[in-house]
Length: 377
Ligand code: PLP
Image 1 (cartoon, rainbow, N blue to C red):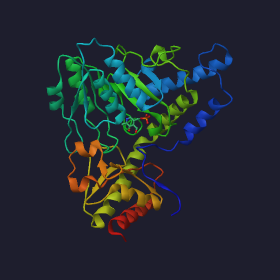
Image 2: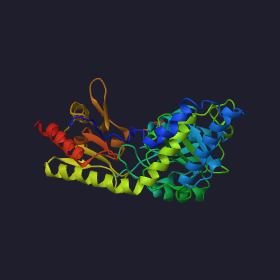
Image 3: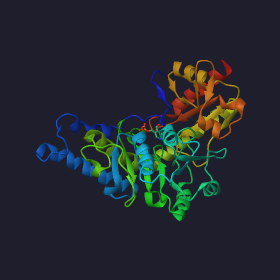
Image 4: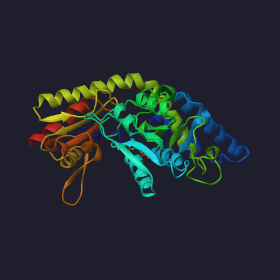
């Protein structure tokens, strides 16, 4: 097999054809600035408005509640810092989980340096945040709860609607980083009950560098980027027209294919797990039964996942690890640590995230590759 077997869709997904085609006019011929009043500006303005309607419709929001950003990281920053900066100094407590993406964790770390107090909720061994633990963490001065919809390393889908219900009872805004979930599972903001939700186009077949933050009507939020007042004053800067149009096209396509993709990807996942079972390897399957379709985190006993990743790469198989090498040792990720994977398995944690272009033959090839690495065959 010559072609690359790409199994790292949680890192990024290939640009889908409909997004590519939808973007083309806005990259060259239709170059007008959407803020201008003449004809060259009107078409891009209309295209952005239509994309905003489509995206809002896809998640059950209204168009006025969608704010375009440069991706998931910026959407997370806007939700978290934008909320924190709205409150007076005496209300300075925020809650998140220990397994958030660094776009969230490092934003909270920054707020801690500014004097805010942050509680990092632990998770169980499947990666779930418990609503009982959330309840005990809430204080009178809590101003925000931010818990991801689905974890990028384990694929675990969090009980966001339950957690958001608690936040609502206490009158606290709830943000969810849904970067790994949007386009991969049904997302309706009213069902989730969240005030804010972050998404990123390149995780669902759209272009990189484009995303959005859903902000429920009436939510207080301080802008982080000041300038010409685009995005209703919440996020200034000339809009990435092609990116926004491509994101809307990709989301539409992903949603139309969701059911079909879900069963296809779960079948591929099962096929891979069946191979692993048959090869007699010693491993743990991490995460929860409620996971992103086609996503699996596996910890191999007494294995160096970084070494496995490099060996698989040599065979044209691209996967991710739950660890990173520094100069002398392999350091396991904060997620692997938080779910409490036993030491002898932790360093051998590999993340495989499949996409609709993967085939059963590729899964067989990947399994053979893993077997070769494990048994030096
Ligand atoms: N949040 C999660 C859960 C992610 O997986 C990622 C990207 O991997 C991000 C945020 C950051 O998104 P972006 O790459 O669009 O900045």
